[in-house]
Image (cartoon, rainbow, N blue to C red; front, side, top):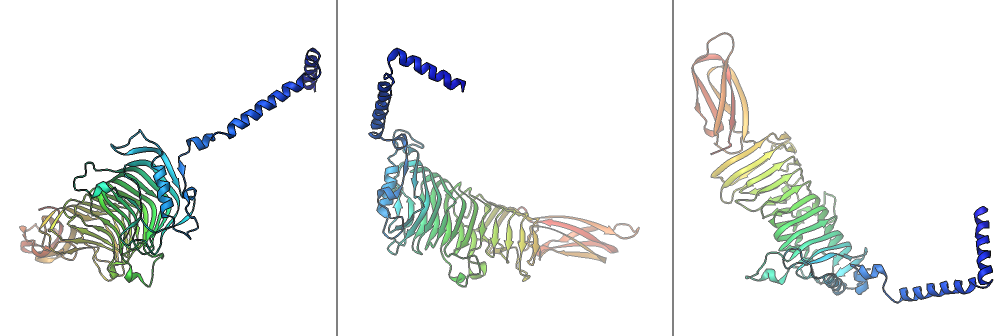
Length: 461
């Protein structure tokens, strides 16, 4: 209680000096100051309003219930976000928008025409809602397009028109008409935690540009978890990467005619699970379509009843993948060239119908630096570019037949062998006399009880 007594004593002393009513005017003055402060504060924007760069379509008249068309409202929202900041640049000609955010606020928006982002913007996020094409949406359009008019000009003066744009937590429903997202002449675009369904053409199409990263995303033309009775009719492509240096990481493709098409260079796929249209129905999980110099890395992926097709693979690496249900790798000849192909350390599980884990379609005239090895196989036929066999018996001629194992017909480039003789008999003179038809023939100058251990490979010219 001592502190309170001291306070009252000080107050009483002040009142004696200034009068008993002196405190009242002072108290009113403070109230007046506070009232004036409130008046000034209410007459100007709040601090958050003044600096906010978050834009939402509802404020621009969008219907978040999906009943009315919101195309124009969303376009106006994005146009406003692209005016959020001027004076700073990322790549030359690309305005740094300072981290502006277009927040869809969990709305369900009907779209009748593509939302084409203004050219020359970056450092912006579009997030958190659903975009659905209506029955008027053009079949050749995409729900969102990063497509500058300058990209269509033959004399375009620079290569990039968008940079550092992120799409996050968005469901793209193309209504079985057009596509989901189009990215042209763009750098460092991110698609994260999105969901693409009902695309008629493509879920995501990347053309030219550099470094579009797709991660933690699901894509399917039809909403299914496998075993769909209409799987034979699945069409379209989930992801089409027609550019360089892109990455697809931890992505599931649950229905489409083709999972991923790669027709650019230096792309990497990691942790991709494809169970789109099965190979038996004409589907392809991953299709590398750039013959000649693709530099593609496919690592730790899951090919589920749908396989990989490589056209004239040059510098292609497939490793640590799991192939289920007779899914395999097909090497398809276009110009007849394979160089720098590695298919190693994968698992293949099939239905015991002896389908080859790697097969060749067409003829390859140039084969160099091809290593297919260390793959473990159940229920399928092993194919490799390296093999070992031991042939024993009392004879003067031993034939090691590698034709069921080696991938390329009539092609053995390197042979190592050793001859062994049982007992203490002397070693006869011996030599390799033939390697044709993937068979190694070793002959001796006399009959002995022994055999040969042979190692071969098809690595180089």
